[in-house]
Length: 119
Image (cartoon, rainbow, N blue to C red; front, side, top):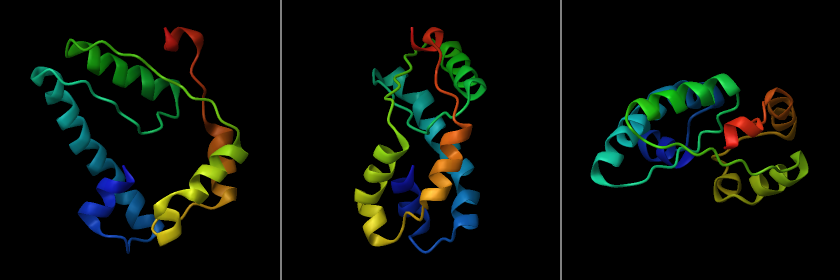
């Protein structure tokens, strides 16, 4: 996602403007994702899918297209996530502005997938 936003909008967006372009970029990515299976390609959507409701909605949309869906969840502690974020190229370049406090807030609202979602 970040790479698309940077490619389309540059790296001088403040948080509000960057968040404002996220939905349109996801919409473009979804259109590409809808087309890819007709070309014999697999699709990986890596948007976070923070809520069970969001995962269920996209699962339904993909299955309606005839795609098989698999949710892959890689659990990580907030410390590990912060370490990964800190090492990202975008962090070093100053184009990925995420604070530790934001990460902790987001981690508190994330709904881990249930066993049923993973099967």
